[in-house]
Length: 379
Image (cartoon, rainbow, N blue to C red; front, side, top):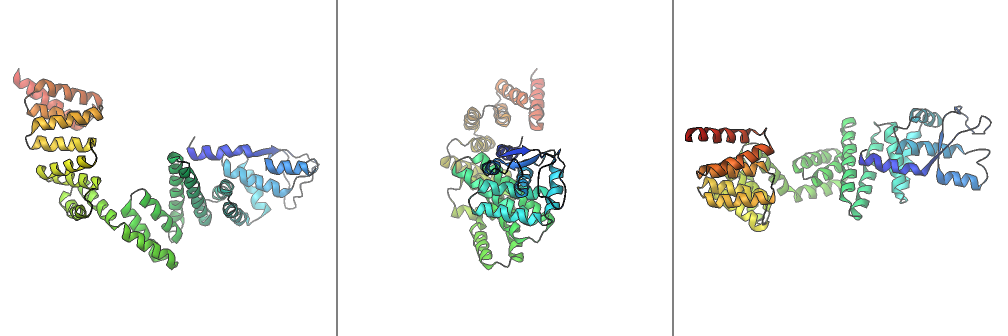
């Protein structure tokens, strides 16, 4: 069961179900209830009805309506959901407005979970109601904040991700809904998707008429300008254009001397263009900031091997492998370095271990073939 579903299903304990006798006075004017349909009512409301001695003779229609809304919100797969849907819309053709109003009101009163349930019910009843989607997304954010206060990052992320999905759904229905762009920008920024955030917020600026929010977003865009440049440079290097990537990233290095992720990507760029000496310096800088960083150790080993410093390379690969003992890439790199040193038995041992870890990796397979070729030549 998905975490979100588990959260809402846990709220079913607040519900109970009643079955009406044919003689019961339900005060329904617009339709007649099927006595076979179990009618949900919140436990607290049923207790009130009992205390006021009405439960034996009649149940308020408002209590049943609230129970149905609650049931739709906590369990969209409940067997009688479609029956409840028909009843709700028959009771009030503007039932969606009623649910939205009360969902928002609950949240303003500090009843966050009740608000969440109502707003989710609205989205279940009509997944094209953009105001419902927006307010449900906001409520999910608020629940995430509560989990963060409890230092429960796993559940917080679960609710944030669901909120992101709701805001994205809005744009599939109405691509000119400004507040969805406003919220999504923050979500993408939180996920370090800076270029995506920039595109979304620039769209918000063209749509919104709220000058205060627009100023807020303009300031945010200025603040994350370097993050955008970093992501652009990162993408250039990882898509095979290290020259362009370095052009973007090197100016940032002058401003951020201890941003180790930046130094690491610059190192990758230098290695890709074959400047192993400069790459080596960058990876050494990374390790001075975060000692023992495994990927930096592995990359430093590659640079040292390409510079002919084989023994130092072996040391770095070995240190990295001790920290990540099932990494076939590190084993493969160390094995090929042993091969360059002419130590065939150790090379063969490492490549075989790498192959055992991942027999489908093309580079490892190529290394195995090279070992076999050399073995064939020495027989």
